[in-house]
Amino acid sequence: METDFKVDGKLTVVHRNGQPYGIRDNSGFLLFFPKVTKYDGQEQRYVDEIRNCFSLAEKIIIALLWHTNNSSLKWLQTGRLNQSTGAMRT
Image 1 (cartoon, rainbow, N blue to C red):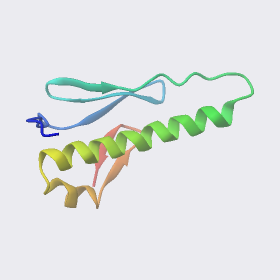
Image 2: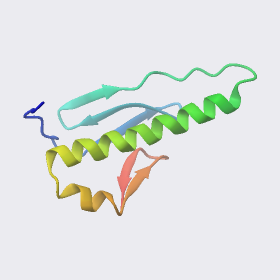
Image 3: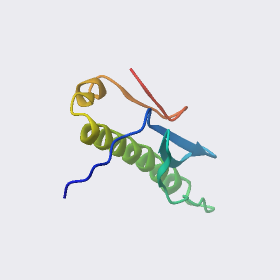
Image 4: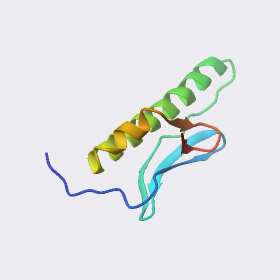
């Protein structure tokens, strides 16, 4: 399926309370992540789900940039998502 979607500026992972909240560009939010709930006795599940959300955010950003501009993929191969700030770093 073809779309005319193009990223409008820098993609950013917005996070709240140490977990990804959504991905946005200059035009606004592109998507939101479900909130991971922490329960007593399930700390490892909580940590694993948070890590999985950050990993998914990175993959989504790579896919969006690749779709928008295939040349961005080469840059992304040398950078990773900074989980503390939610920004791409080189």
